[in-house]
Every structure is written in structure tokens, then in C-alpha cells.
Image 1 (tube, each protein chain N blue to C red):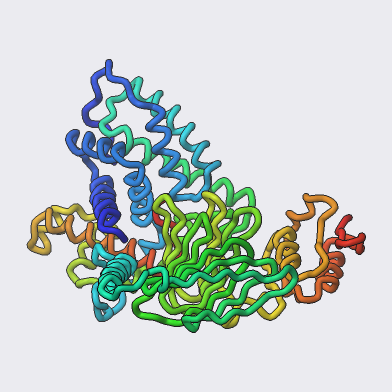
Image 2: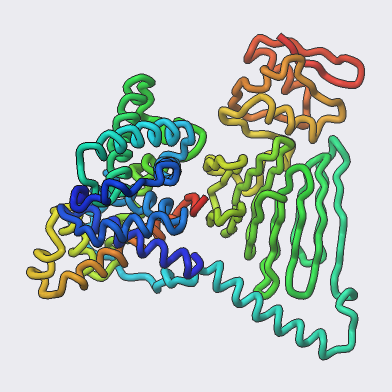
Length: 321
Length: 174
């Protein structure tokens, strides 16, 4: 958390405690109104703190902690500077150091920057070994650019889904830009799905990643968690199964997933395009494990589930009622 | 609830659009739902305008958020009664902070953070929130100033919020 946000949270905590008193002086009342109106983030921080204070969960936790023996304190990582900030500071210090080196050596820095463009043909996921030792599986139709510098590893995922198994490096950070959101990692394995409707989904299989979605929205995702960002809406995803996403092996795990999303997955793999006769069919929800490497089998399963029909019409499959 | 103390002078006008926006933001942060935020903000605003006719209001925002708290509880009750899906962690698309906080996992995270705190801080928070003791009473019992009591609570709350954020997935800001 940046020091600035830490201060906001601290003020919010002070106000939450004051608001739980039976009397508030007129001076404090006026001060609260002033504080609330100075910055919209104050309202949000206050809302989050008040949610904690008022929750039954907090009450249960206090009861539990009061009845249980204390635990050993952990090294304090609640400093105003979070790991992310610290990591960034370290990275920029390193970057500065490396920059000095570069300028000391008479070398055009362009020589040190690698740019590589990766594409996977429609219907065919591809695996790439990056020069830093990381591995990427790019879904069919996926497009990404890699920019390697002595101080950073930057991926821009233009389209599709990619599973990253990142080689750990102390100095060079690894980041993925999806346009509306960015992911920053140390050494880790994670999946990013950039869907055609603008939704971005991130699932972490190992390690820890930080996600930034602009406007101060940021999350830290440990292994076993995932997040889906669609504009202003954010929801968490169920814990991923296994050590890599199912699509890498030609499968897709749906869990109350809209049919439209399943079709998008199919179209990344299938050489023959799948279409819906009625777009409303895309809103139907499906659950289960689908072998997307066999599109026709998936269509059969879908047809049985919702009493639909499908046929091959020229260059595409058409699904209809 | 500390609300009625000194009124604004009658001629002074409230900035109702700003108040409405603050309520919307408050409810949206807690519920993750824009529709509920709009409805509740409108409702709160009408009540505030009516109350202001007859009462002196110390902090318009403190009152607004308190009314919103109550309306959120009412709305949740009504929706649960109507749908009956009590088991669903997050029945709507966006995770509701209020619901997340009541989950078993949240209780574990908060409880373990509390157990790692300095014992004095834990004691202060338990007395303040669980037993509803005043800062002054807690200070007298534990031989410290009210200010020191407040500091423990503030620091403890920030630690708890951060433990919660660290443990899982929670939007920070919007």
C-alpha cells in the first residue's frame, strides 16, 4: 500500500472509532464532513473500515481471539511501504544501477533491448520458451509482444489467453499488460484470459502476483486465487485445479460459465468457427469439464444440456434451438 | 450515534449532489452493487431532507452513512427472504465486502491477526468493540490515556484491514 493510502486508512480507522461513541462534538462533526468531502477515496476507505467494524465476522474473530492463546508475532510487514512498493523501489534502484553501467559502457542501449512478437494460429495453442527461461503457452489466435531489457521483462498480451510459467529473477521484474489491467510478478505461474468483450481474468497457480486495474484499483493474488475484471465490476474466481489451466491440455473447466465464454474458448482451438444462431443462447450457463480440443463433442454435450441443435454450415458450426 | 449537535445556520445550503454521490460510493464499496447504491442514496437523501426540516444535524455525512447502514441491512434481509439462498457466498456478480467479512475464512484471518497483536492492543480492541467500553474507561482500567487507547484501536484496525487484504482478494479503492 502506498504511504498515501496508509494515511487514508488510518484516518478512516480513527473516524470509525469516533462514530461508535455516544456523543460527537460539533467540532468533530464538522471535521468529519470536511474530511469526507476532500477526497472520494476517503469515503471508500471509511466504508471498508466501517464494514469491518460492524461485521459479525469481526465480532466472532474478537471472541475467538479472546478465548485462544496468542500466536507469535510475525515480522511486521504492515509498514506504509508494502512489498510491492518496496519491490518497485528496489527495482528502480537496480534499474538506475544498471543504467549507470550501460552508460559507462559505450553501447547503444537498443542493443540490449530484445523485442519478440509471438502469435498462435487460430485453432492451435503454441508453447514458447522465452530467452529468460520462462515458458508461455499462448491460446489459438493469441497475440503477444515481449520486450526484454536488462532491467525488465514486459509482455503485452494483445489478444487471447496465455499461461505463464515465469523464471524467477531477483532483479528483473516480469509484467503483463492487458490494456485495461496490468499484472506484476516475481517468480510464479499464472493464466491470463483477455476476452473479446473486454473482460480480463487472471488466475494464479503458483507464487504471488499484483494486479493493477487503474484508478487506484489494485489487488494482490496469492496462489490458488483468481480475479475477473469487467469494467467496474470485479469478482473472484474459484480456486484453479492442478498446476496449469485445463485449456493448456485441451480442456476447459466451466463453472456456471456463460455459453458465450465457452464458445470463445472453443474458437481459440477449433479450426472451424462456432457461431450462435441467437446471441441470447450465449447467456445460458454451463458447468463441467469440456474437451475443447474436440469441438464437435463439446457441441454434442451442449446440445444435450439445453436441448439445442448444431450443424456444420459451410465454414462454421451453427448452434440453434 | 453522534448526530444531533449543532446545526448549520438555516440559510446555509447543503450540497445535495455531493452528498448523494458520497452515499452511492459508500454503499457501492460495501455491497459491490451499483443498483443498490443508487436506490439507497435516493432513499437516504429524501430522509435527510425531511430530517433537516425538523432537526439540527451535526454531521450530515455521519447521519447519511448511518441511515445507509440501516437501509443496507434491511435490503439484504428482504433479498434473502425473497430468494432464500443463504448459502451462496456471493450471490451477485461482484463480491460484497459485507458478505466476505462474515465468511469463515475472514473470521480465521482476522482472528489470527488479532492473536498476533501485542496483547495490550488486542485487549483494548476487544473491550472497545465487543464490550462497548468507552476509551476513557478502558484507559482508566489499563492505566493509559484515552489518546493511547485510540491509537491502539486505530493501529489495530489498519493491521486487520491489511491482513484481510493480504489474505485474499479485495478491491482496494475504485
